Image 1 (tube, rainbow, N blue to C red):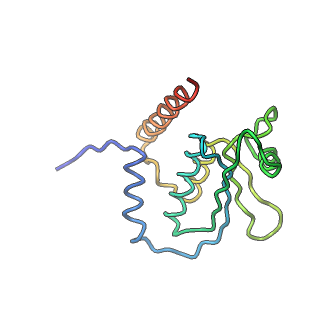
Image 2 (cartoon, rainbow, N blue to C red):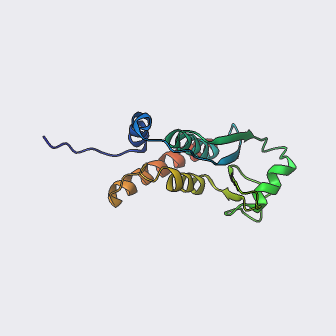
Length: 157
């Protein structure tokens, strides 16, 4: 019996969670940091992406740092300024994702913007979290953007 499934990101995440223990895990060295804020739904998108990647990869060193957006610490403003995707007119927006260079060569990666962070994390560590068919992937992305749009509209009230 053939069944048609509608792929949503939560269905894919549930599948990954169920299959992760069955997958062979290789040693994975990586350290990452996410600078976030507890009140920012966009930063939550990046945080969820990193947590899902950690689970799919069998864990890696990860630090979540929550900052105040009213009283921004200097380390946060500096990290934001170094980030790809940073707005030069801003003194800092969350999230900022930092992937540490394991070689110590000073080649740390800094990324800003929640959608970019989520796409990078999934693309690098969990490439099959989104559906493989382009139309299904587009539907999933559209669903996520609609949810974010509703969150943004409520936050601006």
